[in-house]
Length: 432
Image (cartoon, rainbow, N blue to C red):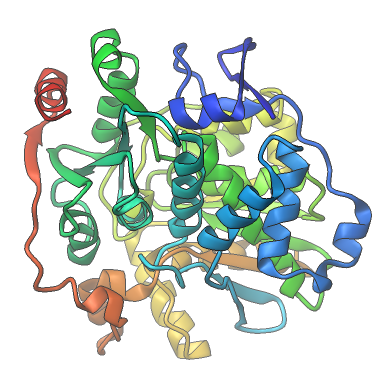
């Protein structure tokens, strides 16, 4: 498999280099040189395939023979070992539950696959690999769980102080061992900027072998395409299928577009955001303007400069008309989000988290002009991860699964940093 940088299509590397480097030197993002379509028979006979077999077919389609089959089977067996079930609210509205992994968030799929793939590529290398990752909520916990005690790999997670939920913070600050947490006095965008600057710092790269576990790494996107196909398989009615994707950094939606480019029969995608609506604004106006993120109830989507937007542009040749023909954008404030959580619980006795609630609102609005659509709303995190807000909104108790509840009283270990690159650089040099 060959990949190029979105900033220079002549800058071509193989899969191993793209995964272990994470980011090209020119500050672009890696994209596949070609995205071959899966055979028509694969989709015609989709019900015959298990989730793991779907993942294997997608990887073989993209990778060719780059990874031996026995090694690929082992990677997928260890990464894709929990379900992604569909729950139907009514005949047209379906919830894709992506929170059945160890950290109770959709990012478990990408983080576990990436950990397995990096471990495979890192065999025999004496110099440890240091993973830098910025998180707005769920990425940190998923990466911490996915890479915990992985030989030869250490992880540094940057998160914005006071802007992730209490249990999200516990997931990334209590493991220890090869996982370190940096609590940054700023926003997610500040954390992401620090990570990107470190990747491009020559002095750091001469001393430390870096990679990324954010969705800027192509190894995060590929496994996220698996569950779009798995969801489509589960639908009884496969006509007019629309995926509604609560979006922050837009890796999840980009993964859906990747599945579509590989042949998945998707009618449309919906980018659903909170007040951080730079992409919905672009889809409406053709003008892309990043801005500082604002804090909201759906904190994992609090991103004002989404990295993966450049991949979306790349997939559509920077053609606004083509992109908006396939993707619609909607945004909602916290008051609307809370009302959506209450509506879903009242009408369907289903507890939806604030991110999924934004998706539910977007599909309702889309149905006004598209009444025949079959909507699949990505429920990206378990509602218990937002327990105080959820209990306030619903005026009732939210059950916390045991694997999350045990973190409540564990001691937080994090280093507090200001938004100062030189301080971050000094910390890295003194610790690695």
